[in-house]
Amino acid sequence: MPRSILIAVTQLPAWFPGATFQRIAQRTRKLALESMNEPFEYVKRNMVRTIHILVHAKAEVGLKAAGSARKSIVSDLLNQRNEGKKAFPEQAVKEVALTVFVGEYFSCIRE
Image (tube, rainbow, N blue to C red; front, side, top):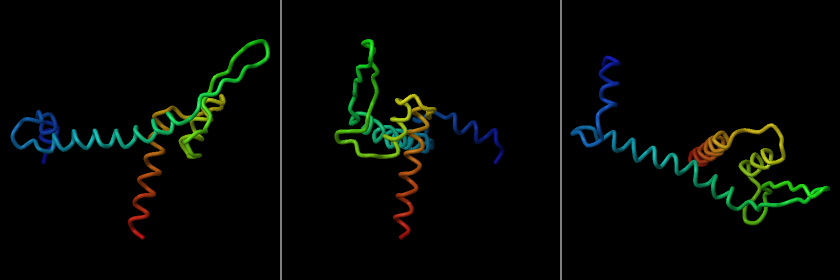
């Protein structure tokens, strides 16, 4: 099938007859984003904000793993960001966490 036909098919609106794949793709994209964002936001919400009062009344605000957020790759990477170390952007942290989760899930299925 020529490439131009495939490109044209992907541009069909979701309501178009025979474009069921468009609706499936929309739902799949939504689920994929939720599976990446929700666990990340859960960890981030459950990290406690700490305020350290420094000499000369300067304040340093950061996130520290505590409370119900257990030690994890996400909390470690977020702590690195807040400690001023060279760190990954949040989107990269989300993608790494999702990749580790999916890889672990599929390795457990095979056993």
